[in-house]
Image 1 (cartoon, rainbow, N blue to C red):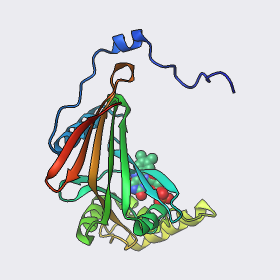
Image 2 (image 1 turned 60 degrees about the horizontal axis):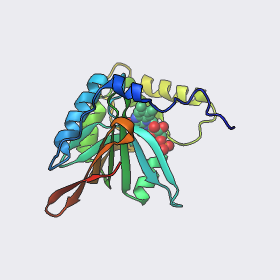
Image 3 (image 1 turned 180 degrees about the vertical axis):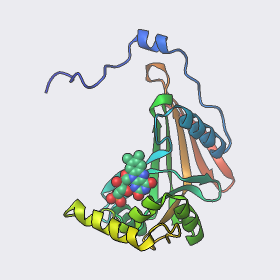
Image 4 (image 1 turned 90 degrees about the vertical axis):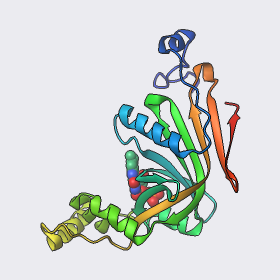
Length: 221
Ligand SMILES: Cc1cc2nc3c(=O)[nH]c(=O)nc-3n(C[C@H](O)[C@H](O)[C@H](O)COP(=O)(O)O)c2cc1C
């Protein structure tokens, strides 16, 4: 293939940048959480859906990277970035073996990215129970019924499992969390904020956790 296909947009022109106006620079911050909260709030206003979606990168037993999207479900300095999943899934196995991971948010509507690296711990059973109970009953049943990441020969098998589990609970809202499902916390050691600027002269602010607190520096784009 020699030509750039029409489905790949061309680089912005001088006129495109002029039409879009100025873009903000990232403020100086001494810790990442306040700005993360602000950017997540902005994204919640401007993204069409799933503004807390983030890529979660892990490595498998052979050192081969893997990546998929999960939803951020909590963020605090104590418990870091929290998400929920099936502990027996591919990512669950990878995290059990290598409890380190990276996250990446991209908010197209804001032309912003946040990258995070850190260590992984499981959430407490109480935290996972609390979150599980907030989910719609059908979503709880789906979590019980799904052998996430393992082969499904026929979708009808999954439908039948869902029907069987649904008939056990009926209208009862007390559907307990299965042991194979729960939360993880990514405790960040590095957080990088990225804000698009005209002509690819982007702004980057990286924070690295040290014994004395967070150390910040600007990076070339
Ligand atoms: C917008 C979006 C949000 C998702 N959120 C989650 C989530 O919070 N937890 C989860 O287990 N999977 C979520 N998924 C599905 C995962 O991307 C993935 O397919 C699944 O977790 C299996 O990944 P694994 O086989 O690498 O373990 C989401 C997918 C998308 C596109």
